[in-house]
Length: 482
Image (cartoon, one colour):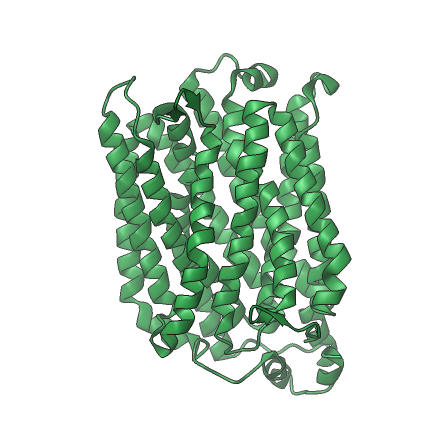
């Protein structure tokens, strides 16, 4: 696969930092929306506009969480289709541009002032969310796949690269929470959505201007389509090794449902807990509740370089992906023990508010868990997925994340029904049990990886050559890499 000839920066291909920047602006758009959607849908003005003003506050919160959960599910389902289209029809680069433009239009639809569309406010809400869902399907699996394609098989910089890439994600989320959140809560929610759309516009512009220089031809050709052409249209079934590796992706992806079910309480129940049941007043000034969600990405920025360098320094002692995933569940559970502490502090009181440090502690441990799972999972998919199904498997990885996001909304509703103590306590138990089960089966999963995480000198040319050898031809390898 063509690599850019522009050299390296900080020990990594310069193309990594282009993808870093593109993802940063897209994540500003996504997390800006994520930080304010529930707050926007539960405010009195929105309730009147949407015809929900007869709902009680609890019903309004449940309604908002339903919207959030459905959106979060669908926004991670469409990457399966987007990954398939990139693999077979349009290539990753075009998919990223199409997705970015579509998401930009979605944010602008949400930001259309209500006085310009009287009687159509709900239709524009649905249009905006729909465009964001479709656009994310094109964008999300393909930008992540291209990060992995920058590295040779067996290159141990890959986990570190995804951790650096993950810093771009979290820089974008910080911008989203502070810029979009502040404009939305302190000025107007519609202006907040417009700010998120401008962030997406910047991301698309960056990709259009700099991609050829720093990425070369990477991502231009659909990998599955090209493989089919070189094999005269005949694609043999997956090998036993490939099937085993796909099983690992699916099993570990399934476990992530529980992780994201807990982690994504940040956008729903923990966001509402911060708004309504946490003391956010400092020296007479009330901090916007959406700002508190920026604690997680701030910790990511601080901790990600430490994690990336630690994995490299550990050398042969570096834990494999299954062990890292198990640790992620341990830290997720500890984080929710902090939320249990917050729930115990307020008890049954309707006036007592929890200390903000409980939530800061929860976000800290959730961040440590996230660094043990999310960038490692992205890297794992690029290591294990067959080349001709790479973007599709990345899409499936995000699909399971979507199921976890939907489950998060359902659990969030329980906070209003059973109370935060029982709901957060249940997440603690689910986290610890999931981590223990995954740790117990780790050796079998490593066997099914067939050495994918071992040190190797094989590169992506070898991987393509192996793919082509399955179909009985090696013709055209040089053409693919030219």
